[in-house]
Image (cartoon, rainbow, N blue to C red):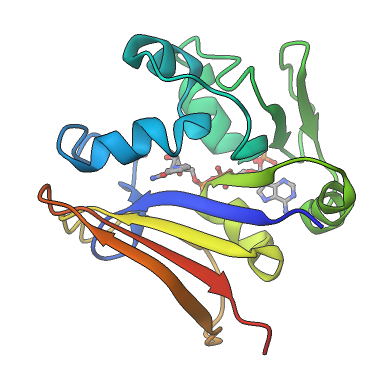
Length: 191
Ligand SMILES: NC(=O)c1ccc[n+]([C@@H]2O[C@H](COP(=O)([O-])OP(=O)(O)OC[C@H]3O[C@@H](n4cnc5c(N)ncnc54)[C@H](OP(=O)(O)O)[C@@H]3O)[C@@H](O)[C@H]2O)c1
């Protein structure tokens, strides 16, 4: 069974974007970038990967799941096919016009993820945002959080709209960088 991996960047206080979607406060230079560009190249938008000369093999992720708001950040700027090397699913309860090759769906994310997990292949990347992540919280097998050394104060949270309910995760790896970024990897506890 394939894993669902929520790989995401946050502020110190757990926001993945500002209240109006701002994301320019996350540092894009520094020693953490080598890991992001090499190890996690599958999760770079194609134009960024091309500009950086980062090959995208699909060996880490071969499928990406996005909420409409996340997809639309790029699409509204003309980036309508951000991850052509991946199977791309965009969740929306409205009818959405997306290019050939991208699946826009109003299916229950949990039901779809359970089906996708049975398929052969590499991991499924939950790109975000906070709303879709909340819907899929019980399906997440691994959580990879890039914590940036910046405090937002408010914004769009890592999981948007969950009630208080502690869920245990096991820390499997943690890396710190001179840039102040940490990349922490967690596995969902089986308990
Ligand atoms: N820091 C990072 O690494 C990172 C990663 C990803 C995203 N982000 C940021 O996160 C922000 C977007 O997050 P968000 O929480 O506002 O939105 P989101 O989760 O990206 O999208 C929410 C939308 O997805 C659809 N959706 C969500 N749950 C659904 C469900 N259960 N069934 C069907 N459709 C569902 C709905 O679309 P409809 O309204 O069309 O029905 C909903 O309005 C953006 O600013 C983006 O830049 C940051």
